[in-house]
Length: 142
Image (cartoon, rainbow, N blue to C red):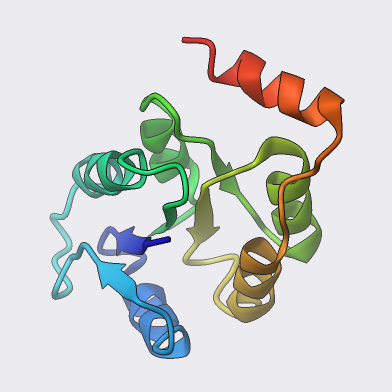
């Protein structure tokens, strides 16, 4: 499994903290490399979604101001199930019920609780219940 991370300018500081927090993982930072207020979040979301979709075991973390723009953009890609997770419960359910493969964080909302959200997202396996498998297949139908 490869884990990719990316942000826009609003998520840059939190991305930097997360890279340090996950230094024991083989985290692949897709940028930006420095703060630039003119960064366009869709470009970074597309880049990450393309990388995650290359292998079913890959995961990603996207960060922008609210997470909404990154989430919308990433979910345009086949095989991507991006989920904005505001707390550990959302992260747990996103993985357990929806087999989310991209964690989307809000630079504003998650600045104080990102560690717990990340830990829960990466420690939760997808449910083995048939109803959840069926629903994810229905999500991925297009």
